[in-house]
Amino acid sequence: MEIIAGVDIGNATTEVALSKLDNGKIEFLSSGIVPTTGIKGTEENTQGVFNSLEQALKKVSMELKDLDLVRVNEAAPVIGDVAMETITETIITESTMIGHNPSTPGGVGLGIGNTIYIEDLDSIQVENLTKDDQFIVLILKDINFLEAAARINAGVKRGINITAAVVQKDDGVLISNRLERKIPIVDEVTLLERVPIAMKAAVEVADQGGVVETLSNPYGIATVFGLSSEQTKLIVPVSRALIGNRSAVVI
Image (cartoon, rainbow, N blue to C red; front, side, top):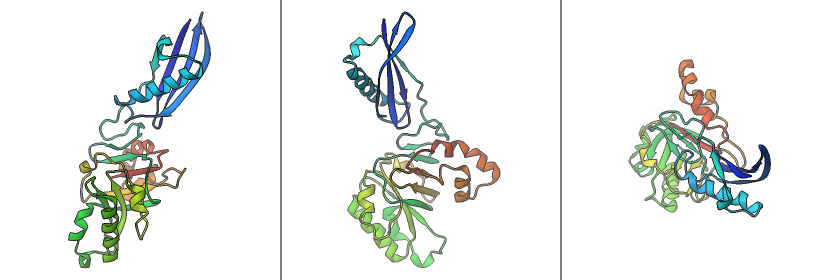
């Protein structure tokens, strides 16, 4: 008799199916499911695998030492320009896309504009702006949520059209609660300093329990960025990778 565990590292969860193999017959014993740890396809997933295994084993009064075989489904990492449908946390692929599903996004809706560091808002000459000038502010970890909210509110009062924010720390809700005009906010973007400045971007955050609709649709991305039919074909994998996420950023 052998005790065998099958492990699947998914976008959001790591799942285990525990079974007993006896004389060629397989009997299901129990299952485990925990949040995926780290970015899918990286060594950080190991802790989630152990957590899920221990959960499944505990249900049938077993321990890790009782396992004879553990089989792990392939968890492909993100490489190059395409996210390969493995988005779990922040992923920035060659400064072209952030696929994101943080636990604390703020605001709701779709914001489109050019990326700018929040501290650079002060240098914008409002009298030179047109109605088409829109901005998505990037908030690095050295700026706390109080300062971030104050800078956004001040910028809006000056007449700057701030449509969204991307935050390095997990301050999305804290910032959103202090804004006089609500905007979609994506936070927990660890590598925010790699995001290019003055590039057109789109930020989308869905309601609690919902998923992004525009950025998970190739035609939605094409409309936002004014893509040709040929370019639209190329971004199909990108949009597919964002299906099921509550929030996302595409640059």
